[in-house]
Length: 314
Image (cartoon, rainbow, N blue to C red; front, side, top):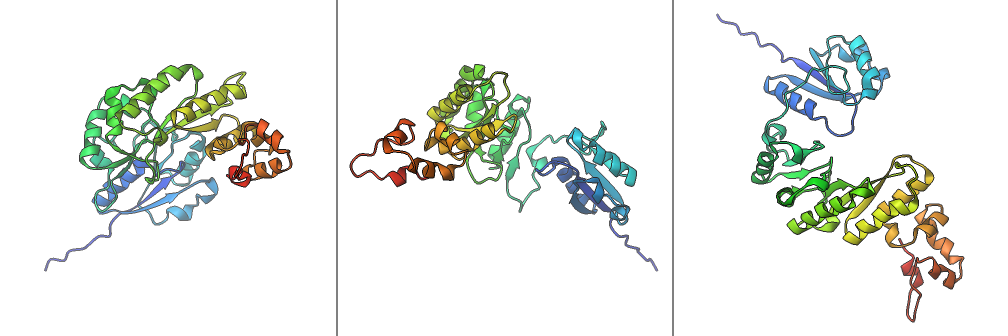
């Protein structure tokens, strides 16, 4: 009589040690392990206090990924508690890779019935030699794609602009059509708007383009310096998004003034007088004479039939 003994599948624990976005290396590793009939479990770790010996008692294999250098203490504690753990990533202090780099879009996608949504974490997607093949795969597979790391519009040409316009580009939540780029240095103005013009000419709507603006970084930077970039982007029809290098009350207030689109409703002077609180702007103005309110550029002079309360709403 032949007796077949069925062995239980191996078990693997995958640990994401940092980062808020899904870890691509761990996702691909999980797919590989499941194909090998491995029982895979995923867990996020954020501090050394959660690393206990009992956590690893029931796992045959433990894998971990760390992206940032600041996570190194957590990596070292993991290796101390569980020396057999295999740790990779740029923040691990190891040159080892958990998985090989993907060669095809279909190696990243998990397959049906999962949505065909791709979050591309490449800082220079169009600087890679195989970008044309990847774009062809995205179009042919009817994938939605989010260029979350942004596109360097300063160096794009007509071919790249057409490629961007030809895919289903979305924000990272796949709810809104969105392209991300950045304008950190005023000296790049000509090159930036040349690239923006190419995107619009290819079919991208200006209000679908979000432009991150680094503020508070350059020595001697003034409000007029950063506000010039905001005004130019608003005139173009794009969406400026200030990013404070140092989070001072003024710079954070400026960021909120722009991101909340309050800059389309009131002047920066009035927003600052209200201590960067949009809900207080109308109350502040209500205490001023009408003529004085008009001088700040917040509202147009109210003529016959005008409704002041409507003009001051946010």
